[in-house]
Length: 83
Image (cartoon, rainbow, N blue to C red):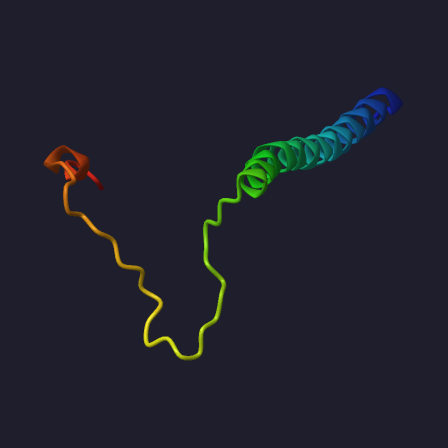
């Protein structure tokens, strides 16, 4: 094995390690940006508007936590292809 082939094999291995590390860093950075700006903005907007997506109140006297929903007066089109 000549010194030139040994050098290029080491150079290639170094580039592979470098590109893998850059890929890990960029994926982590981009996913963190998407999470904080995507999910964070939805959280802040819901907090400002007072929206609660999940009721976490515990009532020990309640028999059930199901919420009644009145469908009286709703059009049939609202229920078409729900799923």
